[in-house]
Image (cartoon, rainbow, N blue to C red; front, side, top):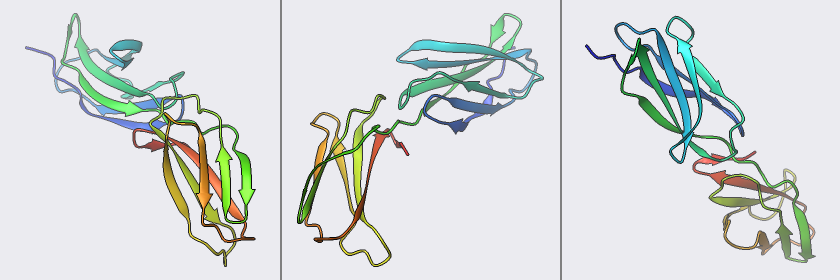
Length: 175
């Protein structure tokens, strides 16, 4: 008979450089599991986990914001199951320094360096400071393909603001 495929592969943790997974046992006889992480069809790391160990594996040293294919196969002797595979992404990292380039009565222009990770776009957010802060929250997406610069307009003169820039990769957003 063939070796059964493991069940319910799921991500249990991720950060900028790490993905941790766990899965449920395959039915029937097996001695170990082969767990692999790949990017662009290139296997980055492989680990064997004994069938009687905890069914979990952590991959470190991954690139921030990157989409990875993680797969698990049950093995018995020289035979192995079909893999169960899921796509998982590390978290993107934020730009390291925001610069205020220009401040006018009703406008603030910010710039930032490129975030060194795989990314789809940036999110720039301006929030009025304080409980009685006047003005609206501004939240915009900025393409990675253009200059890393954004001007917030129609601001309330004299109001203090907090500005945040986050990097987005897939559905994962940097802190």
